[in-house]
Image 1 (cartoon, chains in turn orange, purple):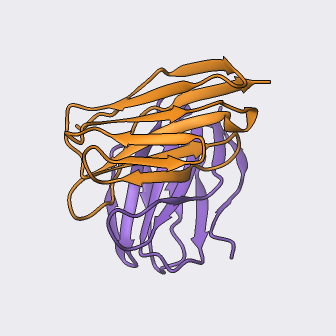
Image 2 (cartoon, chains in turn purple, green):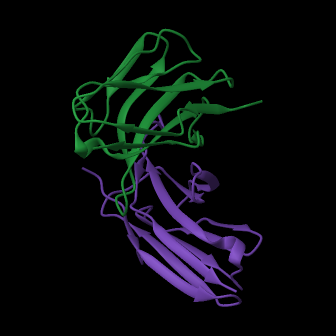
Length: 112
Length: 113
């Protein structure tokens, strides 16, 4: 079973602070997706990374895929209350990207 | 477009009862999935389908059944509900191509007492 370990599990910070959450595995993935889930809703895709070492930016969010494609990080600069939510990483394998493996998630709370 | 629609939003079942969770999509995606989400446990795949008439087991299929007679609909059936099936259930679709994103419904919160 391929596992994706996310850390930290919970994170509570003040508005304006920076933070990084991690997604680690002992297995290689062909792609890594990050989702954000708000209460009462389904997860929504933030970004997909496919190349080792790839960095993608989405406004104040920076995503990085590890060189060996076994890990990924999400960095948020100057967090805002609207960033509050559950962040999930999901790894895909091979040419068919179905049956993603999900991490357990990082629950982020940004306090005003 | 509605995307992925799940009904009902909430349901309380007694042990041993049965029910069907409905999922319908209007995006014409062949791939569809059922996940359950328990607190602190992420998303676990129950069943998936790569097209009408084709279904397969995921990681945690026991106690559930699915069917896929059309591209649009992918119902999840619970027979003889147990407290361990208390969870939030999400249906998702996926367009072709690799990698491609999952499109989730807003979930059904099920409590079995």
